[in-house]
Every structure is written in C-alpha cells, then in structure tokens.
Length: 88
Image (tube, rainbow, N blue to C red; front, side):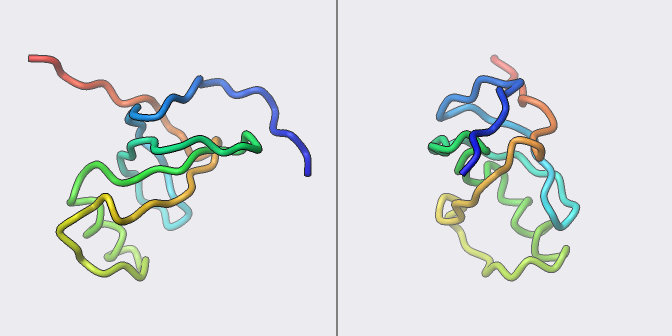
C-alpha cells in the first residue's frame, strides 16, 4: 500500500477540526487516533446538532444521547480548517 504524501496539518488526538463529508455536510470532529498509513484519522462528533444534519442528509444513524459512540474515519482531503475554541 502506498504511503500518503506529507500532510499540511500536524494532527494530534484531542484537536477539533471542521471537516466535509461525502454526504455534503460540514461538521466538527474531535480526533481520537491517527491512521497508521497516514491517509487521515479516526474521530467523533463534537456537536449533537451534527447528528441531525447527517440524518437529514441521508446517513443511516440512530439518534443517540451519546455522540462519542459514532467513531468514523476522516480523510486528509476532507479537512477544511482547524476549529478555534474561544477561551473565557
């Protein structure tokens, strides 16, 4: 299997990114673990409203209270930008 080209971001577990999806919905994800091949990372949703957006776009998900149960793969080309957190 080919190694991916060098990444334009340096990903670390715990960081939050705004990403695109194949269904056309943008949502925020939190990185759980990196892919060993270098093609992306495994992440979970950050916002509960994103589950509703994905269901409305046709993704077969059950509405659950815990968004941590949905772990999915994000390719490098789906990353839009790093999300900034407002510190108070």
